[in-house]
Length: 78
Image 1 (cartoon, rainbow, N blue to C red):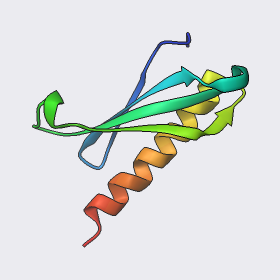
Image 2 (cartoon, rainbow, N blue to C red; image 1 turned 120 degrees about the vertical axis):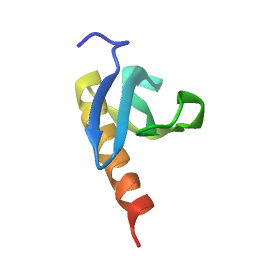
Image 3 (tube, rainbow, N blue to C red; image 1 turned 60 degrees about the vertical axis):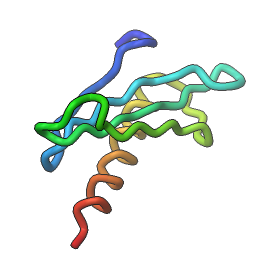
Image 4 (cartoon, rainbow, N blue to C red; image 1 turned 90 degrees about the vertical axis):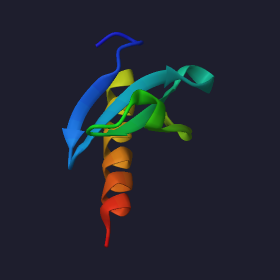
């Protein structure tokens, strides 16, 4: 994976897309978006994480997927 490549995954009716971003001190963080199946990109939920600080972009993507999955779980909670 290069530094600007987003990683996408289907999860519980959503497409999760995570993009690693260079943060301070040469560490990595991430931005993610959640798009429900059947909705337009304009309706996607986008979040940026700036508290982490991961050594590699792959690690930031993995962390971003886990955070996004937790948000989807919370959105679908009855």
